[in-house]
Amino acid sequence: MAIEKEFTLTLAELVSEGLQGAVEASLSKDQKLSVFRILRKSIDARGRSIKINYKVAIYLQGELVPPVFRTREFQRVSSSHKRVIIIGAGPAGLFAALKCIELGMQPIVIERGKDVRARRRDLVSIHREHRVNPDSNYCFGEGGAGTYSDGKLYTRSTKRGDVRSILETLVQFGASDEILSDAHPHIGTNKLPGIIETMRNRIVEMGGEVHFDARMVDIRHDGKSIESVVLADGRALAADSYVLATGHSARDVFQLLNDRKILIEFKPFAVGVRAEHPQSVVDSAQYHCATRPELLPAASYSLVHQVGGVGVYSFCMCPGGIIAPCATEQQEVVTNGWSPSKRNNPFANSGIVVPVDWSVMGDFRKYGPLAGIHYQRAIEHACWMAAGSTQRAPAQRLVDFIERRKSRTVGETSYQPGVEAADLNGLLPEWVSSRLRGGFEAFGKKMRGYVSDGAMLVAPETRTSSPVRIPRHPENLCHVELENLYPCAEGAGYAGGIVSAAMDGERVVLAIFGKLTAS
Image (tube, rainbow, N blue to C red; front, side, top):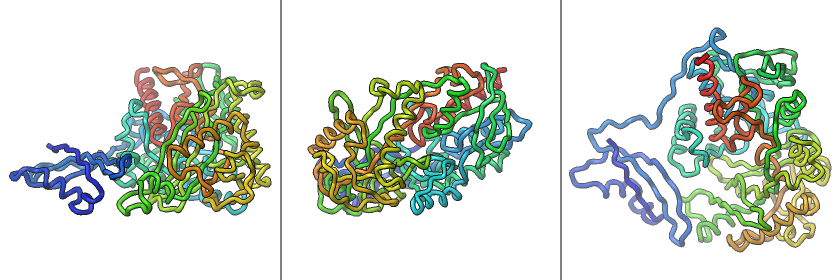
């Protein structure tokens, strides 16, 4: 049986004796080390002396050493089994499909976008030609929005499912087992596509189906249950149950639900900008040193401040990262951020956002549950116009934004389509920009070098979460009106990130299985 111990090492101790030396020194004379495994690793940079915290499982010689992770077993399924149509091949959809196979149901995954490799050509088109394919972009396509925007795996939703199981599944399909121990696990945009492709191949190998370029354009129902879904090519597909896992940017799906009198609701979200700094500035501030030691990863930050009773906070911080163009329609500009697995790009970026609720919707309230979509779209279109009606993005130096003056020049950014100097105060709603200014001033006091001439703002950051919630029963997880429709994950307003979306995908499939086997 493993002995679990915790160790705290300084950088000097890590260099001189290493973690293994510390583990061996902790054992008695009659205990001989076989192997140890890191269960948890985190960095404590709050003081001047940086410490690395470890939780370790120690196995002594002669003891049975278990596998690093649990391997999931999948059974073959076919059309003779209960069928579940899964709309969307993001993390929720893929993990829902795997859970279906595990439980003996056949998943039919329909994805509006292209497979994970074919998507790359459309991403290149956004960068080079400023052309947005509304079905294949950073948000739509196999793997969902997370595939090409980072692969962050940290979640606070530990009570909603088995986080460890989700991480182990990702390791089973090719992720590094380091994600099982890191306090803030991260795969990286350069590695995640291969993992996603391997997952899809297993789904198909075991009898599931995955259809690309298969956009849903209609939903047929009788007021009590879904009868079929219709694809753009005219096909109508029917199944026992339907999992709706379309992601937070599927605006046409929200519109379709509203048109077909399927209940949806307005949901609060957040808007703001992407703040970008040289990574060296963040490293220096967080590690209290001029140059980051080689043993330490690129530093990150998490900031929050109340301005006028509203929280201004950092979102999706990307150390050593890149700002990406994430529009899903042609006449809009949207930004997000991602990092490669090594987090070795020269810039760090983070969304800095302000919550948006019904109280500030104003004239947009006329759109009812779709008010948030129209609110987002108005900001995104204004930024598109301000940057020359291309995928170039409006940008401003942080110090100029605070002083409410347009930057004469803008510095280098990682946003590859390019940027145009603009006064972001005029492009964002005043109540948003005023709170951002107050937040940035406070952040400058909390973090040395944060407010500086080299800090750039790129706008807008609008797709933090879905502006719509699709209500479902808390017990059986089906839609409140349609008994075989299961709204799921980010697009339905029940998750926020890869791991929480994956867990929600599994939860709804467990609910479906329970209902189908009981009937």
